[in-house]
Amino acid sequence: MSAELVQTGGALAIRPEQTEWTPQQGAVLRQSGIDNQVAAEELSAFLHLCQRTRLDPFSRQIYLIGRWDNRQQRKVYTPQTSIDGYRVIAHRAAAEAGHALGYEDTLWCDSSGRWRDVWLADAPPAAAKVTVVRNGMRFSAVARYSEYVQTKKGGEPSGLWGKMPATMTAKCAEALALRMAFPHDLAGVYTAEEMGQADNPAPERHLRRVQPGETDQWNTPAATVQAATADVPAESLTPAGRDYLHEAHAAPDAATVRQIWQDARAEGARPEYLAQIAEVGKQKAAAEQTADTAPDADGVVDGEIVPDEQPAEDKTAAQAEAELRAFAAENGIDDIARDAEAALGMPLALAPAHAIRGLLDQLRGTAA
Image 1: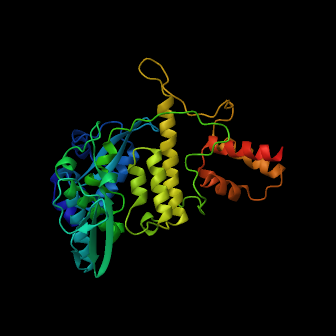
Image 2: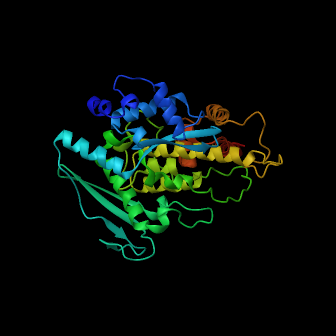
Image 3: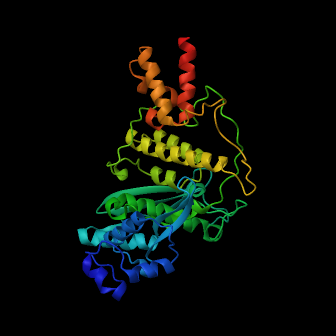
């Protein structure tokens, strides 16, 4: 690892022993578009990722892209590379392990579900499938066009997605397959082709008030979902074919994450993995509520999603959960966490405040 990094870049070379960016390196990174909003932790993580993947940020093999985050009220920087960078990492990792690396023919799917080995239609394909073969083991992944297409404000495809939809969809499928085949080498970095849709304009939403007793938007038939396990590698939890957690992080809104959560559950995703997706949805929902209640340029609030007559002193999920547990203890409900999960369709620890209060109102009505 060290020789390859040190041989290139001169004063900009990333050395294996360095733990922070040098002043010269920092100056070049700022010129590449990284501004002062970047967090020190993001820069440190980026340095570690460059060292681990052996991609050169100063040759634009890997870079940080900043996107505005409503919840944090700042740009959040995400490492990205191109599909070519993925191929470089995969071929190098295979060669060092003494493994053969190959591909099966790329396939494209039309809207009727028929697969083809060449895409000739002017309309974009519904999906693409790429199979990577590493040391005799097959790693197949499917990317749906609708989940990755980058669009303009009017909804039409933008950039290369409008000119080369089959190629771009295949690149996303290839990135998914390579990440399955090389989970340790490619963890923590995504391709520009995959992340393009993260810049799509936010969809127009019609707000309404949540009624008392109404459960959360995540309410689906109950699954056994445990709290997220941070130290469990995501790749060991992902059902074959799709990287649901990555899709959740890249989704434009909480409603999209909810559908991703349901798809993952239908595919038999493990409880820990479902809980990680649910946590992403919870964060996006909180960010949307913050954005909805923020005043516009004239100081006018456009909308607010809150329960009717919401007590001012009870605005957090932690407070609502504490009140629910106290009620359960007083009324002899032995396992309120299990019962709440069955009612809400998600772990109590991940449920938002208004959903917990709605359940509490229902229980109080039953006990009365």
